[in-house]
Amino acid sequence: NLTSLCSLTFLTPVFALLFGNLVLSEVLSALQWTGVCVTLLSVYLVNQREQIATRIKARLANNSG
Image 1 (cartoon, rainbow, N blue to C red):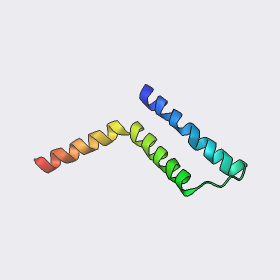
Image 2 (cartoon, helix red, strand yellow; image 1 turned 60 degrees about the horizontal axis):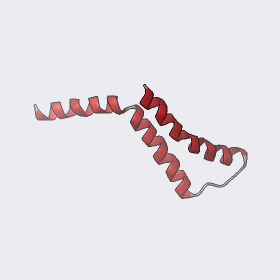
Image 3 (cartoon, rainbow, N blue to C red; image 1 turned 90 degrees about the horizontal axis):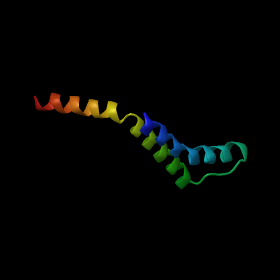
């Protein structure tokens, strides 16, 4: 899926930050760690959107009937 593949490009800054932290011993701020977490969560949600939508529809169908 092209959308899933394109969403992985958003991980480039995450890997750059982690590389800098692990290899170059750079200290990341709380805001940077927050950005990493938000980015990872966003990429996960984009890649799982069909499964999540299916689960939501199933729950709504169970609650309404």
